Length: 276
Image 1 (cartoon, rainbow, N blue to C red):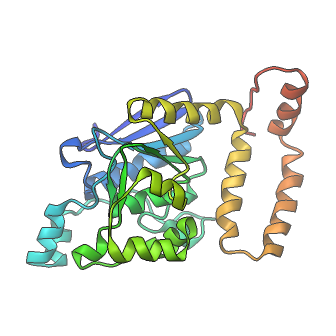
Image 2 (tube, rainbow, N blue to C red; image 1 turned 45 degrees about the vertical axis):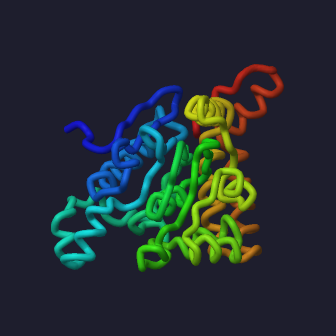
């Protein structure tokens, strides 16, 4: 069955997942949630995919939860809203993945491949939560960011109180959450909320170039292990992180990608990493 609210495309070993409700600024629904989860799982399993880009169709990334759902909750209660948005879950718990990264949106760090948020326009509320769980965030110079929750009588949703300070610091996180003000891409970059800003007219091409370079020039095995190390380290002491890195270094020295990494450098040619 074709997707209703997302698009999925693979080229140059990059899987691009596009939120596809441009007339609603890609406002988030239960259908979109299920389709994004399914697409992430498909890309994670596909050996031809090495990097994942999540972006939005039209002029926005994601305007947050669909206001019709919020209106139903306000008027009829949460149970009625849940009945109207019921979607069959994609999968259950994953063995070997810590519980922290098996929640509703916090599963992005458990995806073995880099996930890049291509923030092409406004990203607000739940949309910002989704972007926070991506590994990297690239913004168009037309992008704008806001939490929105306090202006709706809501709170820091879905672990945002844990993720946001780790990116922008405690004081900046409180400012964004307390005021729910909108900030532009330049301020987001200064805070550390985004990694790069690209001109709107060449935005998607710039994001795709970065992703394709990552897919072509870097060991997929290294990306996989480094990503796991980084997220595990959020729950480790320095000693635990150090010991883990010693173990991973010994394993990497026996890998095919290590041999290829040395060979392509000595032979002065493009790498041909296998991911093993």
